[in-house]
Length: 503
Ligand code: NDP
Image 1 (cartoon, rainbow, N blue to C red):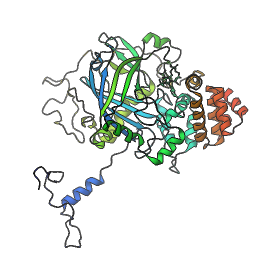
Image 2: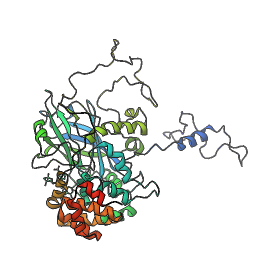
Image 3: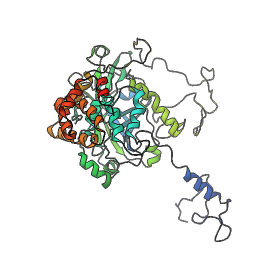
Image 4: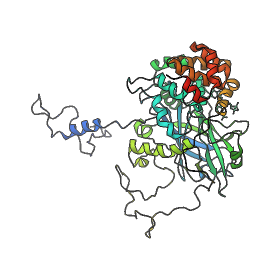
């Protein structure tokens, strides 16, 4: 054996004498149960798979750093944001949303953009997407929405009827649908897209003064998208195109970077703004809330082991540090619960101890004990309850979020569906998109919605018409629908429209 060659052992360190031949009774078998090495090897293999994420199953990740470029200490007490030049280690996971773990990277889908900042006050996770808005604004609708993006329960096929039935019954989705069916719904790779917190968060300073903020991560590589046809082709040519592109760029030393910006709103502005600023189906217009560049994020190191670092990475919008807190955004409130919960299911109750998830720059000291796979010293001999008189960790008063006023009856309050829900989808179509963007948008919608039943096509096309008459007319013509019928449906209330378009 060469001097620095490693010895093969069992999982328990015993040297393995032979890894090619099972132990058998005679040269032709049968195999003996006393071959514990064989049994251990098969049994571990049988258990290699963990549950895949119910959403964001296909992903890629990389390590890097975030550097502050502006003094923002008047807005937030977060130490990692305390002064220009300060650097914090990060891990970022990109993903698609609806597809399975082996699905193609070029599918039309939002992309996940989840950043873990390993700060000296604990890990802060910004769990965003490559779109600034979302389809729905109440977490009670989330499981239903995701079911429609998955497979038909009978056929196990993707189903345009399910997809468009739900969206056409959920008009607040129109803004996100318009972004998704533009070429931004099929980014060329993870390096060539922006990331957005989408949600609003609270920033608070040492004095307890707070503001509402939204994060934007602007790609320095430039936005680059596939057309619908290119994305379809790429599914066959290279289903892992975005994963490969990220890994190879970092391996070549071309480190992708993003300019980090925030939009800031005072509590008074939030009270008086023309729409609910916590409604995740809407953006804050740049003209009203100009983005402020505050930092730069660079990815400069590939993971050494995909499963250990990417598959086991667990992000939660509920991981805050002093200086950053939640807003009343209802979707965010649902996610604050759901992310930790899904990781407990997927990885076990001690998932926070896994190296990629554990705080790296801050000590961890809690009264949580035991549970499956508790692989640190489990608090040693220290006290396991609070309050105690034996020197256990003590709470740090004054670091929590400042109080905010809330009022109103406890009830299932519906958002009032109004014309304001169509304004930003219309503005995107009319003011932001180029002629080519609009052409691709309409073509992409026609190609997908064309697979749904006619009543659903009519109901959905009426929503495009409400966003912008030209937008609706072009989709109607592309689908061969009667434009006057679409116009009539667009003039109705959602309730009347649904009655008039029974499947
Ligand atoms: P602005 O003209 O100030 O901003 C427009 C934004 O749209 C830019 O940030 C641009 O991002 C982005 N954009 C360009 N093309 C597309 C596309 N095909 N799909 C999605 N986004 C695109 O306008 P407003 O702030 O008044 O917003 C107008 C509309 O722009 C909104 O209704 C919304 O649909 C969209 N938008 C707004 C954002 C915001 O935070 N205000 C963020 C992203 C989109 P880039 O600079 O990267 O090209």
